[in-house]
Each structure stands twice: as structure tokens, then as C-alpha cells.
Image (cartoon, rainbow, N blue to C red; front, side):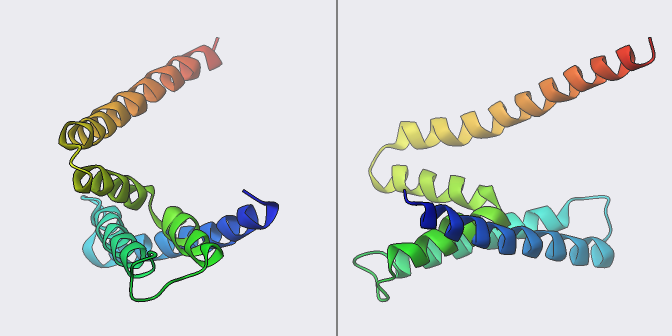
Length: 134
């Protein structure tokens, strides 16, 4: 990847992150914060959008987009909006390639692995917080 590619991804990521933050905030204000409706909506919409744009702008799609545009939108904007969209697109690619077990492994492994990782991070930080007082 060239330096320009990283700039496209960074610019798109900034836009996507701000969009995620804004939409999640709007949803939380309207529907409350007792359930993460904003995150769920972001993940659903981001997954829909990455599937739509990736297919529409693929080499055999209706709109052949230059690689810089695909980087900006797919890795940048939608990657910053939600990494769940990237996970969803990669899992779909495995399914379309007939790699059912790998797709299932990716889905189960991602969910369970990330839950384990967030728990381990919490445990480590909680332990460090206890040491803060000593």
C-alpha cells in the first residue's frame, strides 16, 4: 500500500467514526441507554452498506470504482463506522467460497474471542485499579 492509500483510509475512518458517534448518540437520546440500540443499528447499517457498496463497486459490479475510492469507502468510512461490517463482509466471502466451517469458525471465534478478550481486559484493568491505592 502506498502512503496515499493510508491517507484515504485515515480520512474515511475519521468520517465513519464521527458518523458512528453521532448516530449512536441520537439513537441513545431517543430510545434510551438501557440497551445498546445505537450500536446495534450502526452494526446492521454498516454491514448492509459494506455489502451493498462492495458488490456494486466490484470488478463485475454495476459501478467499477477505482481502488482509492473503494479504500476510502470500504476500509475508511465503513471501517471507521463499524468494524463489524468488515467482519460481516469477510464471513460472507468465506460462505460464498463454500468455506462453511471457516465462516462458522470466524463468526463463533470472533464473538466468543472478543467477549473473552473484553473480559480479560476488564480483569487486568480492575487488578491495576486495585494496585493504584497501594
